[in-house]
Image (tube, rainbow, N blue to C red; front, side):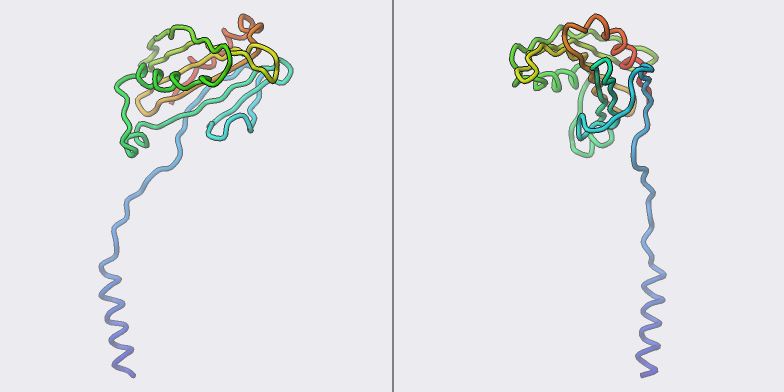
Length: 172
């Protein structure tokens, strides 16, 4: 019996001295975005959005979805440019909606961050009104973002400048 105990102790010491090395990984992704005072954070607009915002009084809302370049690379997905990312997204955006129209995208770079924005509208049968989307795509060194905000189409002129300020405030 003593021999079995000694054998067990010897094996335990031998195996524990060959412990696995560990590598640390960081989770999550931090970015900042500014919202007008009349908007508040919310939930329930989009299940994959990292931040969602709205104003019930003004009947506007929006959200941000991001894809880190590291995670895209792990999935063996690459984009040569922000335009390629935008084209892939917009090709499927609202395609099942009646009277879908998308403007030509406008691109610019600010402080090393690439932005593309476009306007999209469609007719919502359930609401019986035309809906306006401000569609923004952002490329930083770390990630690609989709920044979407919407209102009734007849309020586009009232809110577009605010939607643009939200888009161009994004940083990581």
